[in-house]
Image 1 (tube, rainbow, N blue to C red):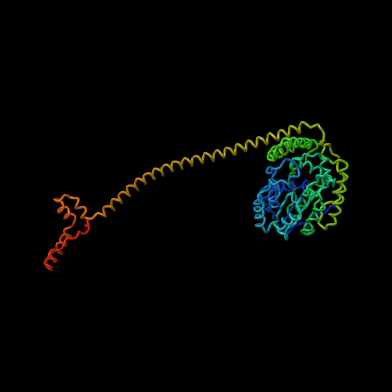
Image 2 (image 1 turned 60 degrees about the vertical axis):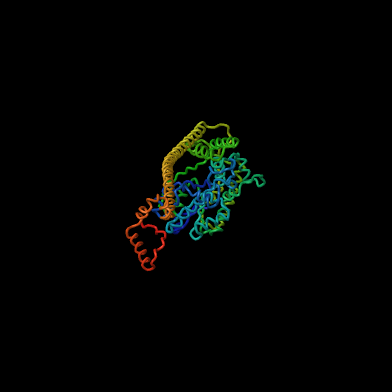
Amino acid sequence: MPGSTLNNTLLLPPGSRLLYIGPMKTGTTAIQSAARDQRQTLLEHGVRYPGTKFNHRSALGALLGWSTITAGRVGRLGPDRLDLDEGGVPDIREWDDLKAEITADTSRRILVTHEFVSQADDEGCRRIVDELGPDGIHVAITLRSPATILPSLWAQGLKDDAQTESLDSWLSRIYDSASDRPMPARFRRAYDQAELVQRWARLIGPDKVTVIVVERSQPAALSDAFESLLGLPAGMLGCGVDTNRSFTAAEANVFQRLNNSLADHDVGWQSFSEFVWRGAANRGVLERKRPGDEPRVGLPAWAAAAAKQDGERFASQIRDSGVRVLGDLDQLWVEPSPAGNVGSDTIPADVGVRALTGVILAGADTQRRANQRKAQRDAKIKRLDQVTAKLDATSQLLEAERAKNKHLEADLTRVKQELSDEKKRTLYHRVRKLPPTKRPNQTAAAYTSRELLAALKRRIKHKLRTGKSKPLKPLPWPKK
């Protein structure tokens, strides 16, 4: 089938949501790398690559409820953990934040991408469509021949999922229907390229699905396709660096043996993520330049034949699905190139040195981060100690004030009681306590002249009116 000609007929309408779902090992990293590096430039050309991360792994993992944070897994090391492990599921706020950014931009084309979406079932796919909006969504699926993908997927499992199985054992689980350990459903949904394409065609319509066949002989075709879909200048996405290269046969041999040893020693996922994935692999072996004569991981003859048959079937069914295809579908069943033996006991010194270097660098990073966290913690403790000391001093002052207040309150209570007692006493009682010789003067001194004259006037009136002296009564409480 001849390759399609790229032109403006591929251009998606403004406001479209382009969901690029992979699967893994089909060139996704290069597109994601270019989009991440040129996030601001894309905005200026009417395309939003939302968020701040390399891709949307965490956000989509949160939406689907999948374990995508390797260091957060809690089960034993080993493959096939994504469906089983309850740890490592991102917080749903990861998706909420991404969706809010997407929803707020109604004019630009939006690029959302991660390979895990190719593993979603019908329910998961519908959830993503509902969240992004069924009217504006378009799905891009990149494909390569199964014979090329399978060795890369197995090698990727060594780095990402602590794969311990040999390549032959792993392949037998794919092609042996009677296997007691069949491959997980998620793997099969992504591997069956025809069913993957048909699943999305059924859900959103074949006119909204674009399949891009990745060919080694045409490395620019992938970036050209996305530039045409998104309306970007030629070459803008062609500068992405594919940092996700596969292990060579010798490198894969080292990591398979390493993973088996780590599993025997019950190493946890956090240590694996820190020292193997981040260290030995990404900061070590994968930074070495692969010698030209170092063979890749390849399929045994029986598996290569089975993969070729799958490729033929996939190509035929995709051709009949009605989706738009860019590239040559017949590339899905080409003969794989010869490859090396993974089971060799010989390990190139450079591979071992690079792996150890990566582990040590990762350890140094871990120590540096630990020191930074300790310094931050110590600074917080120091600030807390200072605040505590101030609070203690303030508390002591308050206690002293409380003690003073208690004395004042006691004095006030005593004075009030004395005043109350004093008010209860009559002039008569006070006079009775005086010596008889002092009573008249003291009693008279307790009243004003006006009060004494008023009392005398009343007695005189009474005497004149009745002819008798007025009986004595208790004197009123003096005003002063």
